[in-house]
Amino acid sequence: MRVGDVLPELTIPVTRTLIVSGAIASRDYQDVHHDAVAAQEKGSPDIFMNILTTNGLVGRYITDHFGSGAVLRKVAIRLGAPNYPGDTMVLTGSVQEVDGDTATVKVVGANGIGKHVTGTVTVTVPVPGRAWGGASGGASAGGAE
Image 1 (tube, rainbow, N blue to C red):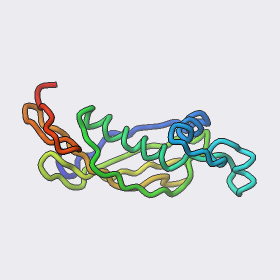
Image 2: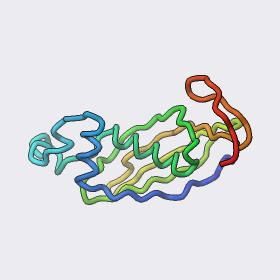
Image 3: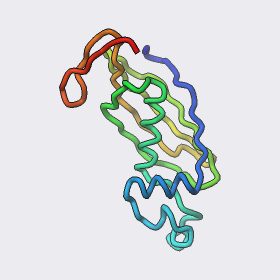
């Protein structure tokens, strides 16, 4: 990991199923995330993705890149343009800071109408062969993958 490293893009088709299942999985039963008529009555052209689903997709983007041993230390995101069914969100990222085995990555997720999500993720990536402390402060065994 080096400052300036660019992560490969991750393209995510925004389907009705993704929006509804993400809302259900995060126990967000607001009708604007599953009922198109209710969403339209509230001024939206269709249902739209909730922030918890977006947060999960941002986390997936980081762990897909840094590996299953990566630990998300902080996710700080802000929503912008809604993710509607039929659109595509493209996540991009770049390493902004590195401190030992911890990096801060700037993340942007854009769709057809603008930036859906912007923010930063702080992630710790274990170094092979070296033990390191987990989120609870306990030691985790390092080693070859």
